[in-house]
Image 1 (tube, one colour):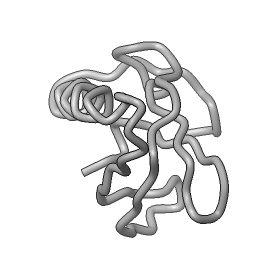
Image 2: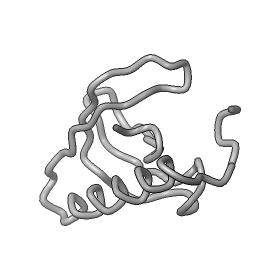
Image 3: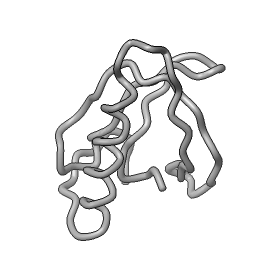
Image 4: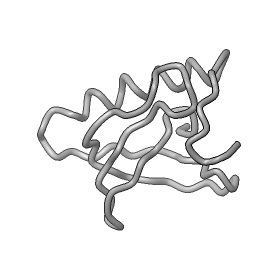
Length: 84
């Protein structure tokens, strides 16, 4: 999949995306709390990540749905369907 390519999600990927969106929205209360999660990068590498959510981005139900977050390395965007 190309970077920023918008494809529809279905099945488990859609359910996972919507579930993580709901969780991240709960961290967007202005408290500065960070959300910690396991993430699979586009190259297939997996790592544990942490970010303070700034805004929800993309289109719900698609591969671009995610959030922008502040990390120790600066701002990053994480797609919900790649969280786990």
